[in-house]
Length: 428
Image (cartoon, rainbow, N blue to C red):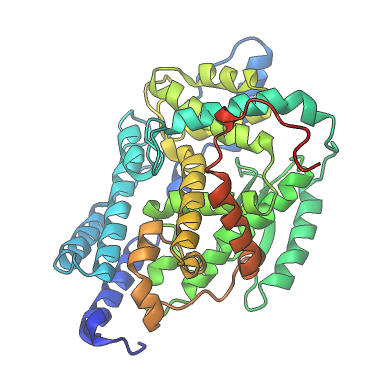
């Protein structure tokens, strides 16, 4: 372990936290939260076939149960032992991470029942939550982007090239880019016929859904979102000498991780208004499901928003993972994309204003929350937590990042509701 100034904790304390963290990683090693709640790919074909016959049905999914008794006992013990050092930021990090995994096990126990909504809301939030530093909540933000997308749809649709890239072409092109970027590791791009999302990323592989049409935006989004955030932070986390949990997708980091990945799309110009509408519609879908809408109702909602039958099914299935398809409850994870994006954007602006841009780079050293990267700053500086091995290209260009954020800070002060007409003589 690297030498750390005494005021940051004794060497014995820091070794103790590292041991607790290692026990945590060992305890949760076999938990695959999203895999445990996934729906079989064949169910989509069955549902859409019935839909075409005019006989739609509410999908029924049986979730495999697992006994988490021993895992929870170990997580309880880790939290109890870390709680004695709760006032120490590293000890607090370990305790909060263990707690989130324990909530996740309760959520998996509740799969197939309405109780899953309560547990997922603790982990991921829900549509009515307020945005940081704002009087607006997630639903209001979602409705804003949906309305704007609808207003622009006709004008923008004629300006974009419309063509399809196969999963095989995407696989080849992404693999070439990853091989050139991750020079110390191998990240494979694979095609997965059972995958319901368009793509999913881990530390050593990125999976693509088979028989899917990918757009030019998809190609850039997958690179920035999946590879240069999700895979990158996992690989950087594996390089951590003391906090191995930073390589794992602990439930508590989901909002920051997905927000950071979506922010990467935004800052690189690879997020389109259609995607903003899709992630916003998921919040509306969750809100409707919580209010009693069933799977078919939510499927129709997505269809009415302009999604294809296949897209609408996938969107609805994301919301009802683990939840009864009869309505009244929802898996709320998809609130994190828009909420996390706005939170991360606010954090980056705050970091620039307070001359803390190094925190933005530290955020890529592993998988953590915005709170973590702030309170753990002294342990980054001391070397207990190491700097990221890889940084996305847009973060490496620090001057460009600072310029964009500086402009954003000032531009946000301009009140568009006070702009009545444009003076065409300005600047002439």
